[in-house]
Length: 276
Ligand SMILES: [Zn+2]
Image (cartoon, rainbow, N blue to C red):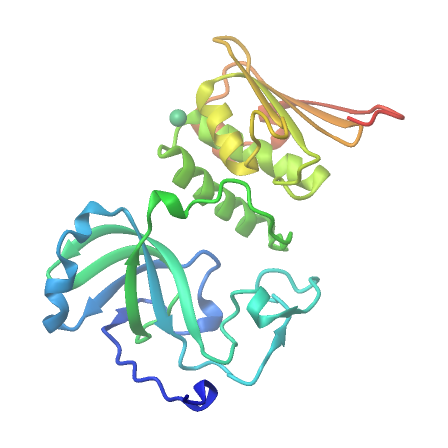
């Protein structure tokens, strides 16, 4: 039997990344638009690729240090503790294979136009696999590593909301703003102890369910009452409550850029001894 740890594996790139970003340090969290340029003889392997909106891209982060086994996710948040590299998706790892979920928006011959790719210009592409509906885990257990920069967190939450909800409507903008306020007070939005009750716009409810992964049951963390009137969302965790009521007449532009106090009426309560 071969000694697997001394085996050499023969991998040849199937293509490379073309991006306006050439510096890994400058790559924004969540990646950016890029073109994956495949070797022309692999074009037959792209048959029916347009049936997919999302792809897993495996690349080789050739500039990374392969001897590092523990890192702090400093690009996301320098205040976080160290993690083993197998517990993060840091570039540093023994085999610097990067795995990124991208949105495919155009195919032109052997060129795939994608967004959300975190590989810099010139990165070798090892493989492309489709993302399937079965890949989803709706409410997984993950460590809480919030970006220390609030604008970055707003951008990432908005991206998640768009992926989940599929349109940039008023409900989406309001939901993202609410989620940011709730996260500042309660921490991780996916926490099993955080419950959300929405009355109002179904779009708002859909966005908040997507961002919090709150299920209707098992355990019940989410409830929704559709109504044509006011949008009111109540967040509660460990006896603490935050109620956000959308002020009448708030439009899309205000929802995107006005201050929280201009968009919402805030009502915060701490109920002593309440275990809810
Ligand atoms: Zn909508």
